[in-house]
Length: 428
Image (cartoon, rainbow, N blue to C red; front, top):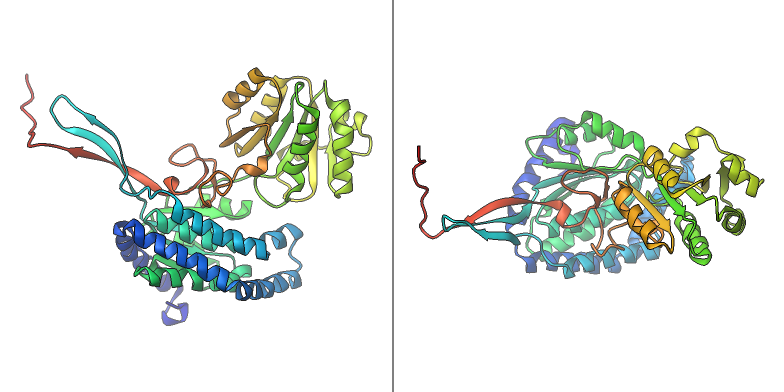
């Protein structure tokens, strides 16, 4: 289905939605074996076509550099051999995961003799709007299919060659399993108005998942008529408690910031208890300096490491997605919790401590979608959580929260199993 085959963008997008709705009927009733065959075939095709995928991606990256797009964007756009393998491995893991569709839970007998429970079912048609991450094409296609959904993918124009090349591998898997290719559709136009049509298509689309920058997600939040699963910011914290093990603290705080700068679960603010600031900040800041990380600290942090720049109020709110880190020395555990509550984005926050009471309080009191003890914030994604891959990170409190995998792409319906029961008259 090509935009050029239609007289307007609106007609094209409506046709895409209609085809997805029809395909969703077939994917919802597809058995596990068919879905797994599609996934393993997709994985094999991605591995076999790795060179072609990297070539298409190299052309996208070259064009992005010619437009002088920033380094964080280029990082998200770039595929490497390891990234391609991760895409394939993610699809293979999805095939190995239990199929959530049709699972019955909470079956409970009632005095009337009926049994009441819940069955997990697909959401239907999912729209994914994303920017510079071509790996989302494979992840989203696989997760939505395994959960019994159809999906409409609208990737950024800068990654169009990469996305279309990956979609070829996805469609190979669908054909091998006898499933409709329209179960996974790539919107084949760079026209930004296509997003507007997609997020307002209440007739065909059941939920929208945006993955991209703040401006994209804000636009979708404001304009969508379809429910949205999203997170707006990733202002993630690591708090080094008074009872932190120094070796763990340095290792975790280093990894949380420098393993990669662009992901949404990268640490953006380091909080250090005043009792250990003089011990932990100098070796940590030496590591950051050697790796080219710009440090912006509060007055107390700068007293320990004078080379830091002075942090402004805005720094505590900022998701840098770059080699920049805000550093604050806090008086107490409670002040660290208060800072996270005030400035955090309810995404991912971690504590490093050997104090069990402090660790349990942190888990209970930090209201984020992922809260970690003695581990890097970089773990908060679907692959590391054993979900195979993720459709995104949700900071919503309704339906899905945190990394959204298979279960987050389904819903539940009530079911009743009876044995010839009828409801009696209401007594007066």
